[in-house]
Image (cartoon, rainbow, N blue to C red):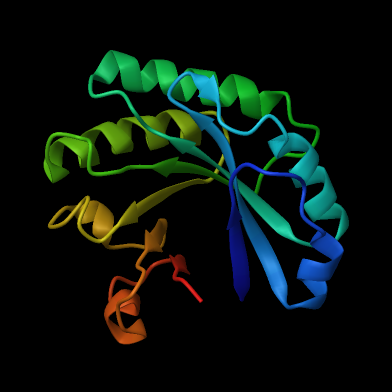
Amino acid sequence: MRGVRIHGGPCPDFDALYSAGIRFALLSGTVGGEIADPLWRAKMISAQGAGIRCGVYHRLLSQTPAGVLGEADFFLRCLAQSPIPPLWAICQVESHHRDPACAALLSRMFRERIRGAGYTPLLYTTRGDLAGTPEMAGRNLCLAAWGIPEARALAYNPLLWEYGE
């Protein structure tokens, strides 16, 4: 199943994307304590109307447990305002976190808060940002793996694999 990641910009032509074989979209929703894309709700409605399933992602910035839970609560408040619940609520973790183990712990806290609110959480990361942690195995992983062979990316057994074309 093919999908797209959409962050910023105008609402794409989701009917054309569906005709091109796209079946899911990952939409940028929030970052830290701010809205990343004020059009994400409109994009979700348009995508769902075209038959494309959606997930919304939050870019995690905090490096403290209290901050992470605050970001999760902010994300949940934003999701609650959506007229259509997303298929996935996604936590994006990047290398600005201190070390993979710390990032894994913080992302786990975020995802547990999201799961507790009734959403299906996914982890969105690169293979280097959480290297050697249990988060890199399992079906709740969306792996950003640009420029590596398909076999290496799929060895992580991700639910979704992002690559460049």
